[in-house]
Image 1 (cartoon, rainbow, N blue to C red):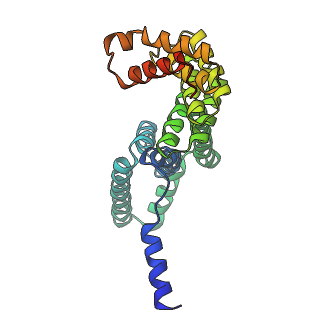
Image 2: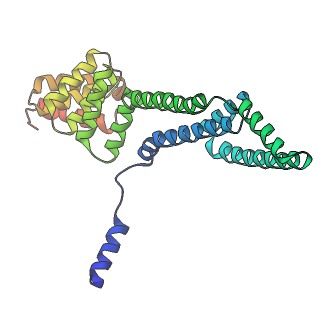
Image 3: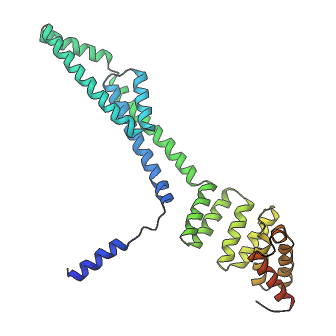
Length: 271
C-alpha cells in the first residue's frame, strides 16, 4: 500500500462521524447494561448460595448487584475473599487441634448440612436470570413502542434532517394514540415535504380534535395556497390574522407573511 493511500485511509477514519446522537447511544446501551447487571446479579446469587451465606445476605447481595453493580460487586468479592480466608484458617485450626481425618469428616458433614440441595442451588439462579431478562425485555419492548418513544425518535430524525423518518415515526405514534398534537406535527412535516394534500388532511384532523397551536390556521392556509384553493386560503389567512398571536404581536414575521399573502391573493396574484 502506497504512502498516499495510507494517508487517505487515515484521514477517512478521522473524518468519519457516527450518525447517532448521545441520546440514541444511551437508549441503545441501556438494555445492554441491564442485561449485564442481571447476569452479574445471577452470578452473585449463585456464588453467595454456594458459599453458604444466609438467605437475607444472599438476597441483599443479589439485589444490590442488580441495581448498583459497579459498587456492590467489588464489595461482594472482597467479602467473599475474606470469608474464604476465614474458612481456610478455621479448617487449619481444627486440623491442628484434632486428628486430620476426623476434622475433614466433620467439615464435610457440616458443609453438606449447610449447603442447599444441588438441584435448587443450580436452578434458582437460572430461574432468576430467566425471569429478570424476560421482564426487562418486555419493559424495553413496550417502552420502544410507546408514543413518547416515537416522538423522541422523530425529534432525533428532525435534527438529522431525515424528514421521511420523522413522518414515519409520527404515523407510528398515531397508530397507538390518536392525538391532535401528533396530527398537527405530522401535518407540518408533510407540508415541509411538499405533500400538501396529506398535510391538509392531517391539519384539518388536528383542528377538528381541538388542537391549540396558534399557528395551525397559517399552516392550513399555506397548504390551501399551494393547492390553488385560493378562496379557502384567504379565509384561513384572515382567521390567522384575527387570532391571538397576530393580535398580540402584529409585527411577528408569520403575521407579516400572512398579511402579505392575503394582500397578494386579494389582488389576484398567484403564488
